[in-house]
Image (cartoon, rainbow, N blue to C red; front, side):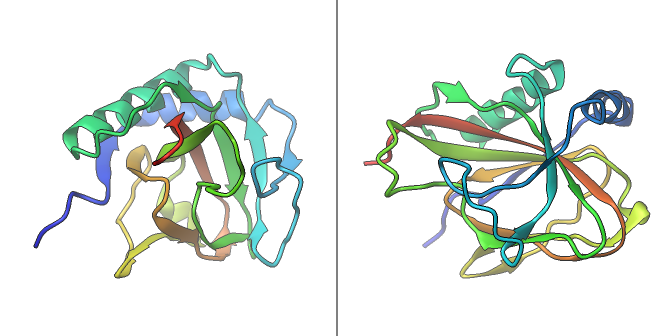
Length: 181
């Protein structure tokens, strides 16, 4: 028995990453939270600094396109009718996000996140650690470079390992639709 691809890989031009990163750094930073209401801070689970772009951000449009393409090309065929604003995350030394999923099935919300889209915004030679790992029966660590886009179903377990040197920057977007049934 085989299964559908668990991720889709694409590539954004480095110049676009640099332009978007400069814009995102002008947004006031926040301590990252967890949960549907974004009201839970637990640095033992997640320790990240985030900034949120406007919903109509040009780089977000680019990420949305990759998320929709992944949904089609990987044949996930999720019903998608919405998306969230880009979250620009900064992981400094010691910062991480332990194993988690991006869906909240018991929240009672009218929609569920369906596709997670992540773009590595800086050169991986600028940091150590900070690996994105996905888990489905076993752990996968995709090799990402600056501008790499990875899209995967939001219910897949994933983590970012602790950064041990430098700073890791990513842009993340979630595509959503009616509740899973």
